Image (cartoon, rainbow, N blue to C red; front, side):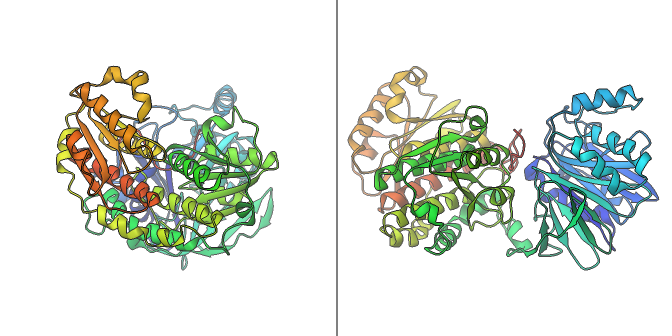
Length: 581
């Protein structure tokens, strides 16, 4: 879940690496470091965020370098545990994204042979293993090729040695992309640090080891020279900038009409796999917001298509796999979610057809699944998912429409207009109620139950206010004990068969003293009377009401977090791409 950057070329490496790490901070930001080759290895690393630092890292000299921004797994965030990590003689430097699961055993072996460790990290064992192999091989590429088969777990590695003018990279179950420039090459966790310099990219496969010099890239797999396709990335550096917005999250919320529009139009009869068109049962595997998207579609698919849908947490699936058959859909914004990728592999082992839904071209999940549908959300920098979530729903709703012979095509193709409308809703009264809350409950029924789950997730992620989502009828089975004037309830109450019972639920909550923020349809006469605050949404199709209510909950979480002076784009303890278990 960390971010890594490497550069070799005609320019000074450190400034390029530092700027690249700043763009990767959504992957982790408790410490950072850079190492360059300038005769010897020059190293600078610190606890804290590189974006907040005034350190001299950018002044390191040399035209070859590697860098790292960390999301801590092994060892507390401090200067010593920050990457890069060095061998005993300070000749070799390593940065790593992933987890070395057998590091403790390897460390014991290395210590018994006289190696001295400085940090608490799992990554440092890699530097010492390469040191041992380098003494025998006297060649950095060969040394890394000897070491990686001994590593259990996941890794994207960048390695340099003081007397070699190259970077050795290796990848297994962690993302790594190579950027191909003019007389210069880049390596990074994703394209965001690279796109300002080149749109040409090579995506490495699991087990690949590559050598980057100023002249060429050589890629090896199981010791044999291989080629990987050169791909063109269809977004620019401007897509990764704030564009005048105070936070990436707000910018990405405002980009949702376009993201939904683009994604709906990308899922066509030609791009939809046959396995989806013929699905008789579906299992959806996902984590976090992607799981909530899957739960929304479970309600919609079962109700409109009579197709049974099973939903599984990817983190549980690996250890407690249920009996499955039919189509298995793995949803991952980054395409690198470790749990979801593992679950897809298990599903394939059970002879199930697998479909990946992701936002990232050539991501790991797209290479693992039998077929892939790509969202068209563009890069999402803020840790909290917004436009990627809406784009996931665009894909899943479009699948639903195809299974209903295009019944919802016109509705979905105009859905972006309703999203645009709700971006302008004044939420100041609701924000004022939320900022003083210790806990907030979100309730809904049908697909608006998972909408409430997603709304509560956004609130807790970025405001740090405890929030829980419930199916509205479940509150009386225990959570009612927590209702008080200090625990607001956000109730999603749209027209339909559950409207009457939702009104009753709201009155029950009010009777326990809880203030209620009700989200309903414009023109509703009853909700404004029973709720403390009424938020009217445009009159539209129920599918689109799912989207508009989600947007309102995203904005409510955003403005509440801003009012509390939270770090909206980089919430504490979180990272965007969860590439470890």
